[in-house]
Length: 342
Image (tube, rainbow, N blue to C red; front, side, top):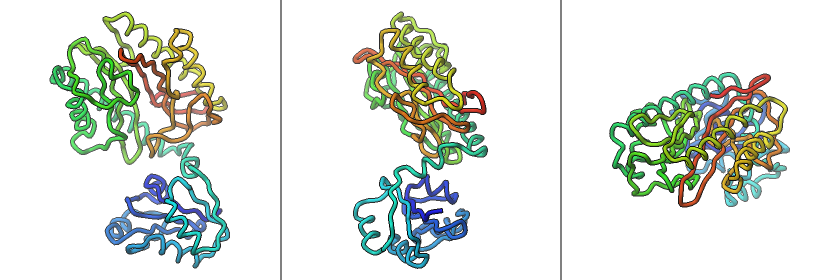
């Protein structure tokens, strides 16, 4: 086992059950690992950190890390270059005669296949996210007409947090009509009315693990965020049915051993055959776990091979500028010989 160092909060949590915004984790071998932080966090860290010794680095965590590395004297140290500033890494190199091995995303690679306990938590996260969609739908039906996207966004954040019981995976996307044609739409002052197309992309975290879901519906007194939707506008219905079919067909082929790019290809072909290929402008999906965007990447160029225990989104979309956009997103688990929608 090479010595490795980490700074990313979710990577730290995965290693030792705790993280904060100022910490470094270093593991030298199976027995010796250290969680270095400052005095603001040491009390809490000592309460929650597992499989590592908590070290108070005072105001200079990097210097404390250097001291530990000199003490254990490893030949090689693996690091993720995406986590380190040039300044901090240059400080490490200057002080140490060590072979640093650059390994981008090595923590995410380690976390790509979920353990059973992680799968159980992610299932709960997905279910809590679904319930939050239901709560938000009821709010929109009762009090949402006339509110702007900005106001709907504000209420979505409150509703998805469930009075502080949950946290958000990311800032919700709440988009009406033409704004839904922007995959990561920013809320505007546009007000909601009956008959509008409404897109909501949101997720929560449960025990630090994320959920991610997108639904589209027509706003009326019977609206819901189910996948089966009916629109009074024929064009909207055609686009929605196409995206839903792409979502279902892509899910259908998921199993261990196939390429992630094949999943993307199936979704893309459905949309292309309907004449809207140029309007599917992002990848089909991404891994979900402690980070909202993890490995594997489900795209045209992905080299990932699907394996049992991987969890990722399938979220094809069609976006017609200045008109509307549709995306249907589910989280799926690769099982022993098939797939489970979470």
